[in-house]
Image 1 (cartoon, rainbow, N blue to C red):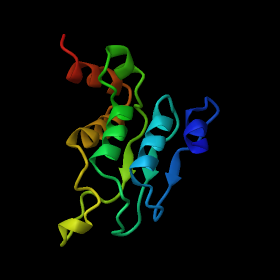
Image 2: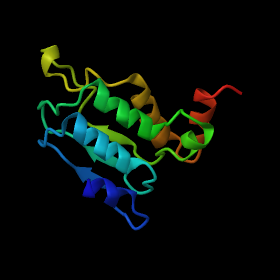
Image 3: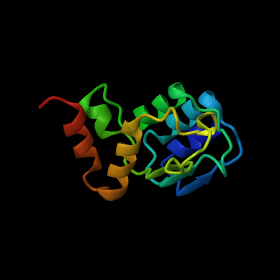
Length: 135
């Protein structure tokens, strides 16, 4: 919880956070996701090394999705996180055994939001608003 509070701090200058081999699970994902809301410095969150399972299910990934693009209101979408460009865990790797693939529960929207943050940082908020709210 201290990490979440530190990430939300205006004075946070952390750009990369390595949490590989920590198996943070859904509870850890939710705490980290809360910390991303309002964070303006973190670019990359490294969640795993090699092929180790990080214990995050759809519930944990949905917390990251909401932090990257809170669709509850236009204002919440606007203040969502638009700086994180990667939650690295090698989702592009081909795994021989589906049970070992830590990316199996990741919502495709997360990948899209990360891509917007990386490729169009100055327009990410506007793009997310146009994508998720009727106009």
